Length: 251
Image (cartoon, rainbow, N blue to C red; front, side, top):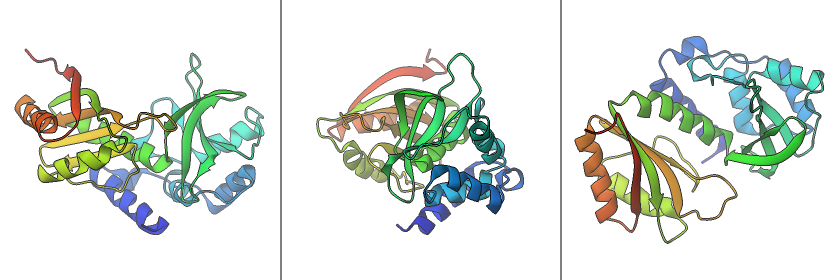
């Protein structure tokens, strides 16, 4: 898909699942976006440009509790020299939790032009804690968790495993056979699936090996729906399913 098609797909998804988003998100000005681009020292990824145009001032209901992705905050951090300009890393999210201030950065070493890998680290540098292969997947996964999975009456979480590296290539056809659809296009480390009575999300940290393992969260109308889905995943594919927790706990 083209960069334009990917952003349209993403915008349609968010406007569909996030209540009142269109009235509450607020984009940054072209001047602010151009200032961020000068700090990056390169053209901004096309998806990030879209993000700043739509949510560069306010993410509305999509806002994270302690992370500030606003262009104003990003520019302020560089102006205050909390972060120094770097050809590889661009600060895109400021973490206000003082106990663990791991800020969100783009890593342009893993850039596609349309987007780039999202990692976390301290302002001055140090160990990287990779999050998602793209900002697009991070936002979609978070929105699905908050506005689809966590609104379901019954949820469970655990691990999907497969002997072969391309886990989603085994998961996709089975999910489709159960009536699920994929609302957006994703890479091999992030899966989003939905139908009217259930939602499944799964992901794997970038740059780690063992692509054949992905953490999942499944939400649905009731425990019976989830058990039937888990049963088919276990018996009709090469996947191994391990459930670690039910919310609310099963009696």
